[in-house]
Image (tube, rainbow, N blue to C red; front, side):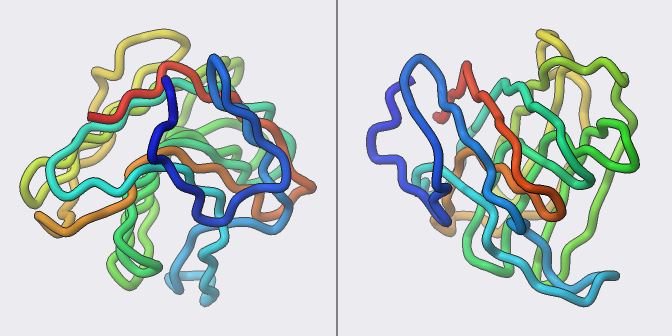
Length: 181
């Protein structure tokens, strides 16, 4: 996919676009607002395009897990306090499929993924005031529903991909089959 008109929020030090998108997450990056941990982080790497309303972002990606909370996936972001990230995250030594919905305060939903997980496909569809998140594992179509969440309708938002390394020294994610309509 050509990334025409795509822009970075918190551009990483190392990335390359060609047949796919390769991103190395910088250390100490994250997206989170207040809940449970008490901190606010808005420095994850997000690469996307501003979309005015209804949309669908789908991305397949592979992650070289390294440390606790390494994460990658798709993002839908109005501003620092209104966003959704959905993808895969490494927690307590194993991968999870996860979604965080933030409207001032972040919440976090996770489900276990197979320990030998190789790739994840995430599909996030924004329609009216709803965002529907589906996933597929290791080449499967994203047919499993992960989350249905409120998202403000008709407000321009950045739609794209994201990654972050909150704890570790950073890691590589390879995005391919990225589609934004």
